[in-house]
Length: 137
Image (cartoon, rainbow, N blue to C red; front, side, top):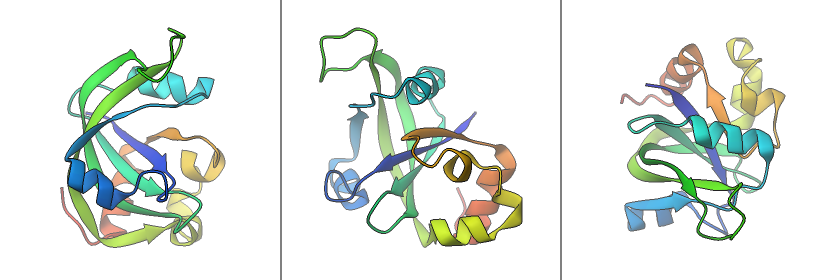
């Protein structure tokens, strides 16, 4: 199993909407590096759900339930989407400020590649954020 971080601006698609929907397709990604990450996702992989721009914090956990397929929002077959389902909210959301203040997370893609909308999360990074969030899987 691999870990990922997916970003959404709350006014476009929030964690609360994700919970209400139960599952959704993660579409509209138009970055080549992020596309590579989407294509690498496998069923059962866990994703942190991150509110970007407003809040700037990891707020929940999702699971990949359908691997990469043609993004339904475009006819261009270069772009893909994946389906994810809500697992649960974090007990304590983890802010970008807290992540940047944690030396063990200094090489995290969220920090190093801040504009990347979908990024990998290393096992030790996942464990550290879960500890900060006071949440278990």
